[in-house]
Length: 476
Ligand code: PA5
Image 1: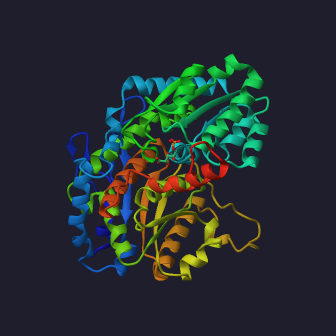
Image 2 (image 1 turned 90 degrees about the vertical axis):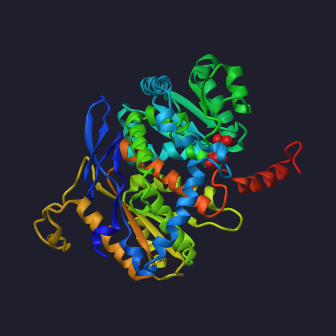
Image 3 (image 1 turned 90 degrees about the horizontal axis):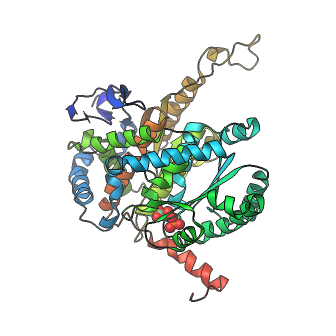
């Protein structure tokens, strides 16, 4: 098979037009100002899994992928009441988008710090998008230069030092809070909210504090909804048919993302194009379905752990989001691929040894980023004492991407099958595409594994014990 056959494009059909896409070819999308522009496709290269599978494995898995996808799109499987996310990129009302954008702008213009309070699916999507696009030091820059909004996260743990240092950070700052909980009963964000609300009231008084909190809640139920209504906080709603980890394209993710200054319409546009692409019937040309199929072929061959590896530190939280999506969706009934995520080169000097030579139950998925807004060249030096003369004038992106290539080859040679998604650049559009594509692949993969990908019964076990040990009334 020629190399080219391992590369598939993420897009075939755009806005009703049937286009035959070559590798990395461009497609029309609608930009921020409604202008049609051309965007390259995301590609999936699975050459490095071929030595680990048999010639007919892919053909054999295709009927299983199709069956699982049918269950998903026909909404006939377990968890079918939580499939609203499938259509969000086209069903979200313009009024809601406008409300989110205007509220985001108001937060940005009137605050130094936005605290997003939430756990799991209630914060990871926003954190993934914001850190990918705004960069590692966005908070420091915003606070040091007193322009821009720092975005901090709370309620995702109960660490005293985390909350204490957040309280120290927000002293004398203009603070806005977005508390997010679909159930409205989760302990971690509820405790963080109590503490932060007290601090806010002390700083600006109760009336102003109540104007500076927005709650994102279930439409009808939950303690958070009741509290928000009693205090008069503005509320956004998590749709009934969308679970936490599939909610990044609802106000759960979009409000903090918009407050950070990002273009949420471009994100929805990327998701919309992904929604079109996943309709492709030929599974070998369907990036989401093929990914679901390939990882399941490897799982059946004993590759029970999948690592998402990136060479961009801004994608750290994207890895965290992906890990939660797949872990909570598939890890059930004593089955499921265990998802992990690593940041390279950092983790090549910690986990790299294990990946290269440890137990052989690993598969790996790389995210390769082709381009960015900026680049840095390896500078000229008077002497070549550091031996880097051969890299002078080369861009850091080129060196970094070459490191990815070398790593993928080394891991394949060490017995770790791997595939690579190449993303033209990390912006709102491509993130929207990736969010949707991975969610869809997760739904398909979950049904292939014969579990309900939209519940999380296992999460209750620790809560039950914690409540009993804490003496919560009514707990056993
Ligand atoms: O994906 C999920 O459903 C979970 O990760 C939830 O998002 C998480 O448990 C937080 O739940 P809630 O929003 O109800 O506080």
